[in-house]
Length: 409
Image 1 (cartoon, one colour):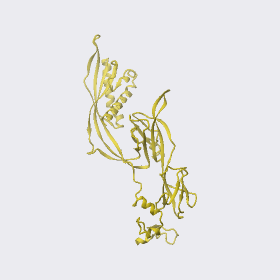
Image 2: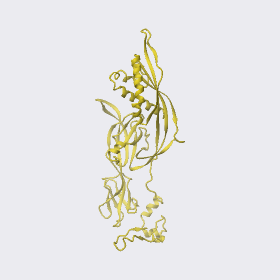
Image 3: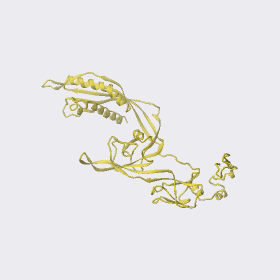
Image 4: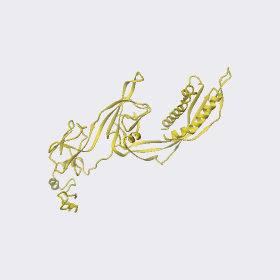
């Protein structure tokens, strides 16, 4: 974690300083190419800014680093048989959600992400690069099935994923079991009941169906993608490989999806500034120091990088050419900053429903009538209200006004 964090901060600081000096017409071409993280020059440059990380100290925010629970529309999970290292983390895209009037822009379901290697056009040159495809398995919850006949019903999708169908009699949310209460065909989405339901009931179904596949999308190494799945930020690292498959699970509402552990690091970074001209060295040092302490401070603070102190070290001169008695001049800027770190540990599966009986007991009870259940001594705990000495409560407002009653059992 320390190496990844410091490396990311160094890249961000180099990017920020290059952005600043890239707007200066005098130093744009001579200085910006030499703002680097290492002394990787074949020849000593005329002007350069070299960034070096020195030290870091951790700040422990909690005894076990636990920060709290993460509530989100989406979370990342692995696929069985895959290493799942291509995507480092995912987050909600707040900008996309805000642009969609606060609603999540992608439908609920499981979005499978497969990494492939393909030849794509890169600025007019064909190159073999890693790309990824999105294969969604969309989720439908509590849909009222369309009645085609006394025993025949149909889901709205043309077909559904085998094994994903759940059928309930409503109201009451009484579960039906396949090959006991009904039979179904995944290819047509049709459900055939063993017996017709009462006139005041209807059929509710949950299922998943295959959505439209999309891609290919370029895989950004050490970068992020915000377009492949609207509303989701996919952050890729340097461990992506061909054939890897991961999955992003999206719900229809925010729920607890992970536990967050984190803390804070205080880091010290040094900038070595060098130039052949003593006046250029002084100007570069002074302007870089003031930019870091003013404009860059506000810009980086919005990203969670807090600059707490900027100091300037001593100046020095070194021999550039002994024969020509030529020198180059150096200066040092020390930067202290603080940034947070966090990792999310996915909770994974969520409990949608709990049954007091085993699946075999529930399936057996689903195939019996009420009279048979009572004769068997209620092995599944199901009773008539009368056998428990309970009576109906009728709302007095509706008494004698209509034949429809509000019943509480």
